[in-house]
Structure formats: structure tokens, C-alpha cells
Image 1 (spheres, rainbow, N blue to C red):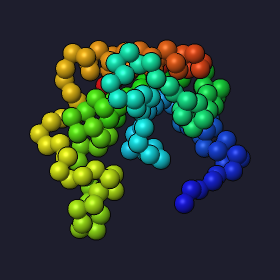
Image 2: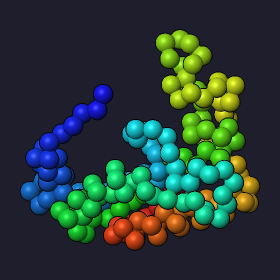
Image 3: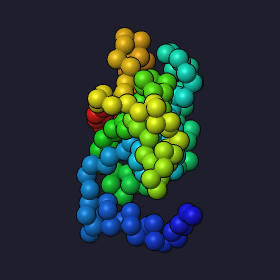
Image 4: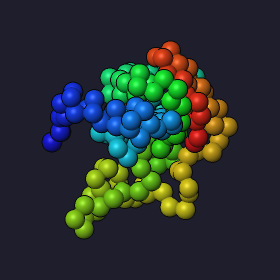
Length: 161
């Protein structure tokens, strides 16, 4: 079930966070693609082995995330944006899934994330395929992200994997 907040309530929340009389945050943190708070898993390029990022796209963010960032920037034009990825695209990970492990539901082997428990990644901090081609592709992925956001009127001041 989705909750819908009125425009008036959204405006109040945004003002309380970014205007002079509110908290007046000066730094905003945004995920690079999906995070624990997303409606579902996604990256900006889910096309397996697309090392050149030909299929890179931030289209999903244009409709869901970017409007909120732009609203924050209207209220606080000097807001600095910090971007942090929660996971690389699934094809860059050893288990080819966004999660590291299956999380069981009600004591079963079925995970809420649909990851087969046999594909759990243990003892690896990220599950990332630490090979030259993947590292270069991920660097290009970040570069395209920063450039795409800039084209959409948002400067990413820092990116911290």
C-alpha cells in the first residue's frame, strides 16, 4: 500500500528541512540508483556485460527522485549533493543479485529479495567482481551518473562508494 501525501504537506516538510526558519540542511545525500528505501531493486544499467555503458539511463530518477532534489534546490540553492551507491549493477557482483544474502521470511528459506540462499555471499564486503573490466565499467558508470545529473540541473559535489 502506498501512502499519498498532499502537495501542501510535502511543501511543509520540504520547507521544514531547507528554508531559513527550518533545519536548513546544507548537505543532501542521494543514492546512486536503488537503496534500502527504494520501491525495488534497480541500477542505471542492468544490461549484463555492458562495459561501455551504452544502455546507461537515469530515467527512473527523473520521475521519482530528481523532482524532490530540484525542490530542495529551489528552497536552498547552495545545497551540496553527496551521492553514495548502495550496490553496483547486479551483473558486476559475484552472485549477480543486488543483495548479499537471502533474508528469510517467517523461518522459511524463501527470501524477501528472491535470492536463492545458495547464492549468498559470505566473507566478501561488497560481492563486487574485483577485476579490471568491472572496475573500469563501474568508474564509467559513476562518471555518467555525475554527468547525467548535471544535465538535469543537479551538481553532485561528492560521490563516495
